Length: 156
Image 1 (cartoon, rainbow, N blue to C red):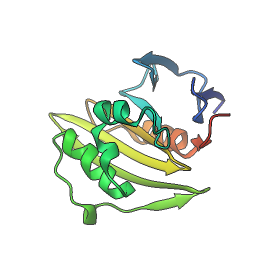
Image 2 (cartoon, one colour):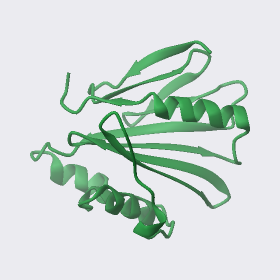
Image 3 (cartoon, rainbow, N blue to C red):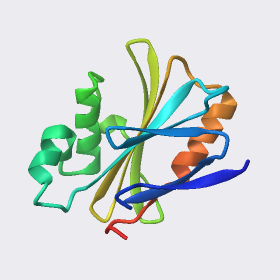
């Protein structure tokens, strides 16, 4: 499958997504979706946790940043989505210096897959949501997009 590279406006992360997909920005949060056959959309939010000047503002918009560990942040994120979760329900993985926690859930009749990632002070949250569980092909594409994410840490 042919892909194209997306680099966030703040240069905190990049990813590869299918050329046939579209992207739109909603309040500076990019969303990726298949306009023809897709069932859902993948949204990506990245914040620099080390920016102490803006941390209070970030905390107001993203209260889950108050967590000290990645698992605490994911539990808080899910709590603010009205999804009960305990840290022992989460499994942490690591690749290319990126620590990440994936979590799938249903809420209000929709399917969600959230992946919280952290590297060098940058926290990234990727959330796929759709009206139903995606088919095997869309699941594979979403997985490939998430696996292609590179977090740069400092602004490049």
